[in-house]
Image 1 (cartoon, one colour):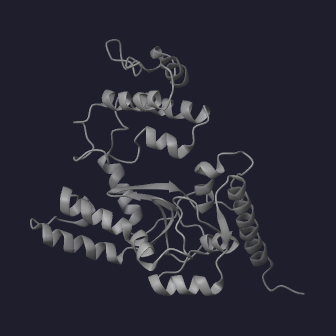
Image 2: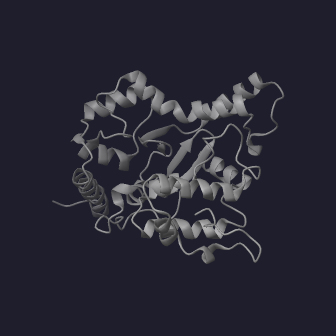
Image 3: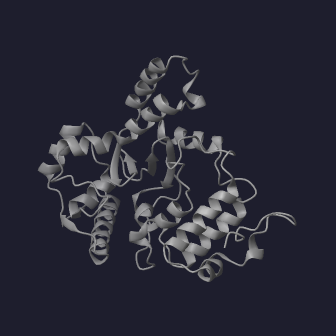
Length: 302
């Protein structure tokens, strides 16, 4: 048989082989996986929700359908449940606009009337590429319709670029913590720009966060020590509260003391069963994170 484009076959085989290895890895990680979606099932979902699964995500869901906690069940969940999941990013951002006055600068001048502001926000979000849920608050854009789109974390007004593509997503999350499951050679080396959502990520970076400032270097070191100690990436992010201020009614900002946040982190470790000695040993010696000669150490809390 003569192939008009032999490179096309190699690329397709690469995605298929990766999908098979990934599903096997999820199985071995005790994540429930059902048989993959059929062409008819893909068509039914895409018709119901007016989007098309990105090709790389489709390859995975064809090989097997993860149905463990946090995964959308495209086969058995009701249309109402799936509709909520697919609209959750829009609903969360609109809630922040109406209740907390959220309004990125690049959206233009904010209307004084909250109803008018909400209407404009909904119009902008309606034009944005649809985000397909893949796991908990992680989503892939459906536009452009091609493999290699980045994965975003979207929760309320918090929008973060989680990974360059879906391969690196599964490598970074707990499913790919083992060195036996590395990213394939074709994994993206940089993030593709996505209309609206990439701008939302840039807007969040421009606002800054509690991670910056005097404690930034110390907290980054804490992250790496936790990872080296065997903690999953998602658990590290949750403990370090890197994804927003959901526990509070007001915005993240300098009004929330940095030292207080570190106290919360240590409190979580202690409540998880760590001894004071374990916390200090895992996160480092008290001298490692002194801010200055007169500053408070990160571990004075212990």
